[in-house]
Amino acid sequence: MKNESGSVLLEALLATVILSVSITIIIQSLTSSLRAAQYSSQYTEGLILIDDQLTEYFQEGVVESDLNENGNLAAPYEKYQYKASTEPAEEFGENINILDYQLNWQSGRRKNNIKVQTLLFKKDDETAIQ
Image (cartoon, rainbow, N blue to C red):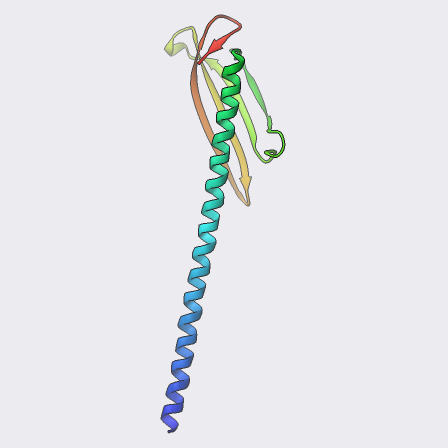
């Protein structure tokens, strides 16, 4: 009888340890999944914002050869900072500019960024098209 009660106690203790380790692993997995989903959401939002900004540049029809802009995006996207610049792409011809666009944001301690580069055909000194 004495051995059985010690054995039951040991089984209960072992079951508790296994359960607590399992719960810890599950919680860590959920936390990791939430972080990945948040990063993916921010990255997707950043890509959409870049697409909107580049579309705006192309719709204006004017992208200067010496464009150099930077700053924060308007609310509710003020956590994103951008930098846009153009330079002549002489290796492709004299009528082509390179547009560099970079979007930066901070998520916790991690700094994230997306860089996009595209070529623009210059119509003349004042206008350019994609």
